[in-house]
Image (cartoon, rainbow, N blue to C red; front, side, top):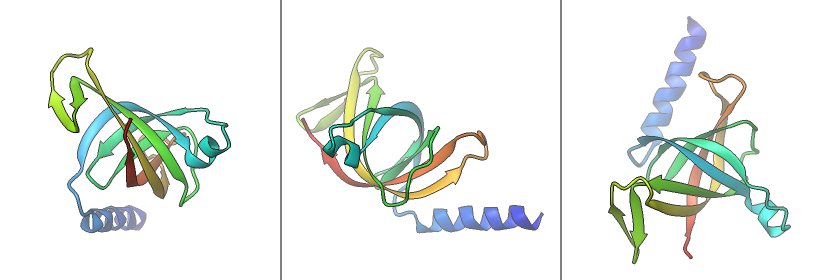
Amino acid sequence: MEEHMVEQSKAESMEDRRQHERCPKNLAIRYVPLEDLMRKASRRKDGELLDIAAGGLCFLTDETLALGSQLVVVLEFPGWLAQDGQWIATKQEEDKGVLQVVGMVVWVAVSQTYPDKYEIGLQFSGIITT
């Protein structure tokens, strides 16, 4: 019982520290450590987006990542297009708005829902435009 209270307090304190409202999303993502990109060993890995906000995102993955790691993350949003710096909702499943961001791993936790997976908290540090 006491352990559950500690976890609940930790979750509440995370909510208090958030600067931006989180929007739940369940989308597949691809990511690669920035270090691997620079060494041209850029094997992309898959994850599942759990939620996203203006300042960062949370995703589920099979591997743990080191705190402070820099990642390049690619997200595809079905039913959206990015045109001239604006996002347009087309509601057409075949349309996919692509967002590429760079961020830093700020927390890692074993998933309570999937104990063989990890939840990764990523703080955005930039957007990659093409």
